[in-house]
Amino acid sequence: MAEAVHRLIAHDGLDAATMAAVAREAGFSVGLVQHYFRSKDDLLLFAYRRVTDDQLSRVARLVAEGEAAEQPIRAILLRCLPELWPLDEARRGEYRVNRAFHARSLDNPTIAEVARETAATVRGQLSRAVENGKECGEVEPDTDAELAAVEVAALIEGLADDLYREPGRPVGDQTMAEAAEAILRSRLTRYFAGECRHYR
Amino acid sequence: MAEAVHRLIAHDGLDAATMAAVAREAGFSVGLVQHYFRSKDDLLLFAYRRVTDDQLSRVARLVAEGEAAEQPIRAILLRCLPELWPLDEARRGEYRVNRAFHARSLDNPTIAEVARETAATVRGQLSRAVENGKECGEVEPDTDAELAAVEVAALIEGLADDLYREPGRPVGDQTMAEAAEAILRSRLTRYFAGECRHYR
DNA sequence: CACGTAGCCATATGACTGTATGGTTATCGG
DNA sequence: CCGATAACCATACAGTCATATGGCTACGTG
Image (cartoon, rainbow over all chains, first blue to last red; front, side, top):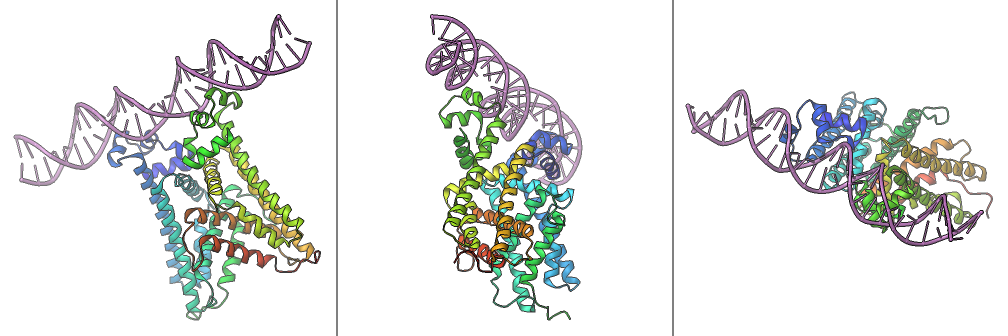
């Protein structure tokens, strides 16, 4: 059912995700959807949580892979953060779902709380990455980790909007996707400028 | 009527802006609203345009003031860009309206076009600011103006989200607003590092 | 066997929605 | 003065929505 909600919102917007439409899309009756979800808000909240959890766990997997391969933190971040960008049709759908719920979070405290938690998680991971970087020598010791985390998180979000809006627009002689990655890389390179002294 | 739409969306979300509610809020009858707007979409589009025009003209005014006072470009940008942030109740309302329409732009091409134009305008102004900075010596001549504009625009947008979500959260020993300004300043100072050779 | 509970469904209900209709009043150019 | 056009209104209409209702299986437990 959550997948049905995802598909409907990604394809036709939040308003398309009515109880009847969700039931039809999932191949069940309206009654069954009601059986599992006390109200429509419950259903939407569940679906939203699923999307954010999905994104965060994909990022976590990429981080783990990078750590296993003993890559520098800078490289790991540069690999995992664009996972949050709408770079293919699946993630463009995810973006649409996210933005739809983002709007709903303006009036729905429960959804706002999920959005807040998700943002805090990303920021927390970034902040921890910077702190780790200080320990291993990639980052200057006097860097404000929290401030850097806020900046990079904001940058990611803002670039996601641009990427969605005009994926094909050229920026100079690059594609928008290349430009976004270049911007992210230059920012990360600024914070993670040193060499890790643990791995070789 | 556009003001009524603004108030309703800012206070209770896009769904609250029904024809009946708008008419009541504006003190007119439903029929009159219909008299001036062919359809609800027309009404919403008009209201959205008004909000974005408002924001852009406020920014333009601040830019003009800064230019009149012969301030360096860096200072002008640092003064006018936070105008787009939800730093007081009025601009928080504006933010809510913007985000509501942002979500609607996912399904409504006309609204998407307005959003695209607005983003392009901001980017264009930023890009021009960098080019001007090159001429007057504030900016390194080999800076990619377009790339810098994309980065700063994305940063502004992303920070706006954070500012709205948790205006009171402390970042280190600063408020969120101070942190956002510090981040913006450091980014601007990086691009506009030189002295303007025209004034003084 | 009984029986409660979970899974499952079709349909009724009542509240809202945007828009259409058919009007009245006022303004103003010829 | 006359007629057209704009301003303005109440209400009807057709549709959609979330949710409530009542009933149907099937199954595990006492």
